[in-house]
Length: 228
Image (cartoon, rainbow, N blue to C red; front, side):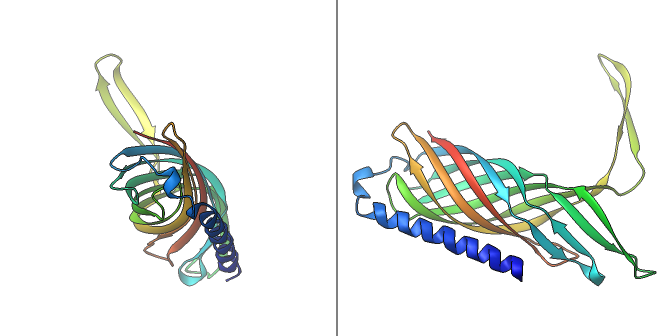
């Protein structure tokens, strides 16, 4: 509950800043008309996922720490207001898992790092048809989660290579899953005359987990991109 209040407070502050900036530029929106309509765009981003806790079955729990990550987007501007894009992001946060022994009812903790890969398809609405504009986003897709904890003994695979002959290599299977996820975001973008643009946003994402409550992850991101 305390964590939810913190995230809500951050979202309100961020939205208020966007609203103030929007009011500043709204009177001059037509003077800086955008050229993004009917054009593609791509961006690279740095993101900061916020910490979160996930309650599991029979008292099990997962506490995920905040972490920096990276990502990219590719999208098409249907018109000055509507952008449809594909958004990929990657992060490797540390976590503490509380595991519960079903026989003794005892519990113990595991500390490790997990891989989180997100692939989302978004619709983004820009409030103004100008170079500077606040925007709203909604989207859905898939999230891949890898605990990096082995789910069995290591294995090996061997093959004949045309250059190196007979080769064997080892591999280790881990507990992982791909789940449906969705998101909403709010932010603003600013375009330069040379087709470069910047975006800053706050996003709240939800991952539909099968054996626990859904994961709720907030994140801040800063992007630099190009319109072409």
